[in-house]
Each structure stands twice: as C-alpha cells, then as structure tokens.
Amino acid sequence: MELISSPPEMQRRAELARQAGERIALVPTMGALHEGHLTLIREGRRRASMLVVSIFVNPAQFGPNEDFRHYPRALAKDCELIRNVPVDVLFAPDTAAMYPPGAETWVEVTELSRGLCGAARPGHFRGVATVVAKLFNLVKPHVALFGEKDFQQLRIIRQMVRDLNFDLEIAAVPTVREPDGLAMSSRNTYLAPAERKQALAISQSLAAARERWTRGAADANDLLGAAWAVLRGAPVVEVEYLEAVDAETLVPVRDLSRPLVVAIAARVGSTRLIDNVLLTFDAERSAPRHH
Ligand code: PAF
Image 1 (cartoon, helix red, strand yellow):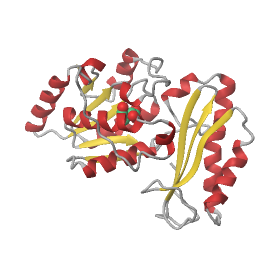
Image 2 (cartoon, rainbow, N blue to C red; image 1 turned 135 degrees about the horizontal axis):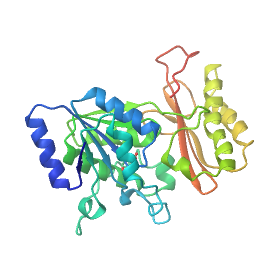
Image 3 (spheres, rainbow, N blue to C red; image 1 turned 30 degrees about the horizontal axis):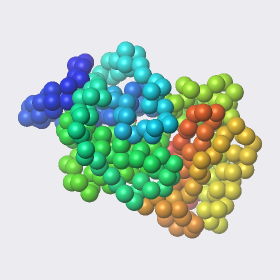
C-alpha cells in the first residue's frame, strides 16, 4: 500500500493511473475505521482496479464547539485494518496541505443543507461538500463510495456532482450495524457502557417506525409516534431531531405516497449520534427495504 500525503503528488499519481487505463475508486473517510468503513472499502475494491482510501479529519466540517480536537485519530491501526483488503493508495494529507493560507473558495449545496443535521450544525455540509470536491479533483475517481448512514451527506454529494458536472459515479452502501442494531460510527467509542445500552433506543425507534409503515400507517405522524414511544423509554437519549422527510428533497412529509426517510439525531451523554431508515416502495409495502 502506497502512503501519499501531498495533494499534488496524489493528483499526479491519479493522472498517471488514468493514463494507464486504471479505473479508480475512492472511499473518503475521517479515519478511526470500523466495519462500516471496511464494507465501503471492500465494495470499492470490487468496483475498480485502483482503490484509494483517504483519511482526513476535515476541520471545515466541525463547528467551533464540536469535537474536532478530540475526534479519534488512529492512523497506524487504520493502516493495519485496510492493508489486507488490499488498498492501493492511502491518501492522508495534513490540514495545512489541504487548506493552505489564503484558501477562500467554498462549495455549498444550499437547500439540501438547510434541515436535519444542517439546522443544528451550520456550515457543516459546506465543509463536507468543499472537502469532497477537493478530494474528487485530487484522486480523480471513476466511482466514490459513501454510506447511507449519513443520508443527508449522501444526498448532498449527489446533488453537488449533478450541479457541478463532476464526471464520476456515486455509489451508496447500506448502513452497517452492530449485532444489536446500533449503527456503526467512529463516535460510538465515546459511549460509556450505560450510554451504549440506552443508545440502542435510536435504532429501535427507527425499527418501530418501519414496522408501523409496514403495517400500513395513516401518515408520517403515525410513524414518528411509534418511534417516540421507544425513545421515551430511554431518558438518556436526548433527541435533537426526529423527522420523516422526502427521500429526494429532504423536506418533511406528512403523507406516505413517496419514498421517505425517517431520520434521527440524538445526544447520548455528550456523544451525538445519527441514524435513519429508508422506506421505499420498490418492494411490496409489506416488505420495505431497511438499511
Ligand atoms: O463521512 C465522512 O466521514 C466525512 O464527512 C467525509 C465524507 C470523509 C468528508 O470529510
């Protein structure tokens, strides 16, 4: 596995690979890799001849009171985890190389960034879109892979690719869960054992909403009511938002005629966790897809 930290070197390496006819896959990450990332990385391996994983804890997507300084960093362990996939290039630039003094250009996907996580984390998705656009320009991937756990992020990246004519495919990979249902996240490592137990109410609340949907709910309030009933049993879980939104526009919905996402963000102690369930009609209503 090659380790590249210089952005211009990454760009040269990618250009040479393209000229040699390689198909490049990119899995962008912030490190502290877990099974969720490894699923993305293995899927990237399957889809390309050259697989690049980036590890960059992007300061631009953290608010002033968020956990940028304390975000878990584990480069040596991450290298060990991905070596055997195998990964061809690990791109791990430092902050000064990615944001040299004088940088002043931002990418903002305005409407899709307004609600859900965007409402509580102003500037977050601007930071995400900007760094992902930069990574696309540096790694020149034919395909980039993102997890459905960050549903709003995925939707925003797809919109950016469409709006700015990036020439690549965005592949979505279903959320990977712990055996008990908790969505995998680098932030799960922050949870104390008692918090970890109550955090389960997050995925259980979504399972309850899905169950209600399966049985033929009247409207979105019905789904949210089922989710709230679970959450009320876990007082440590402080809900920031619980919403049913259109899967395309991310605007809150009432009626259930179109594909929708029930999305939640909650604090468990000082740890902020997110999760969602996508409810689509590509199968029978009695058998919704659950990621
Ligand atoms: O999902 C993440 O880990 C980050 O938001 C990403 C896409 C790597 C951009 O920093």
